[in-house]
Length: 231
Image 1 (cartoon, helix red, strand yellow):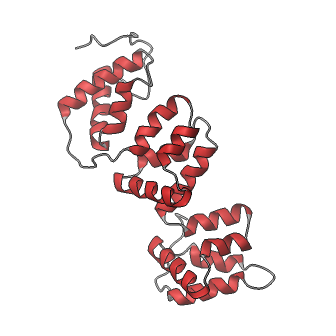
Image 2 (cartoon, rainbow, N blue to C red):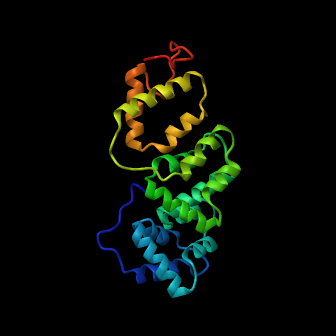
């Protein structure tokens, strides 16, 4: 969808609804018409279409889509139609139930969304599944990922630009010590990664690189296993 654009002159919502209804009618579904509408509207416009469609025809648009088209195309159209928070909720739910280490959707939602976006996704998740996202992550995600992801998806972290440089310096040392001990799921690592703002974490990672001459994502073979005594 990143390569698609909203036309300069967008038809009235009622007209879009009527065209979608026509696309679903008859023996064959007009997939091209569906794409020309839903893939070329922004989130607010699609939200208005969903609301107007339900009012006009007494049927939820997503249900109509699911009844008429199937497979990967149905999934793509549904993803276009959902609000961003609803989309995150759907993706998180799918991945939580079929969790495999290295799953990207949950990690991206937990780490890349703003606090407000993550909170909205959690609300949408509860509305959709009648359970909390934290509950399903705790139930289905395994190993060290669970210990990290549960507090990440539960958090509402500060999102401001302020940075405490002395704190970044000291917590970089803590991270280095735990990483050298291979204590990747240590409570201190979890605490730092799940409670600090993105700006603060970036300062900590920069300090880590400055102090130990390599990024936090790469462990140095020359670094001793315990480094808590470093100044």
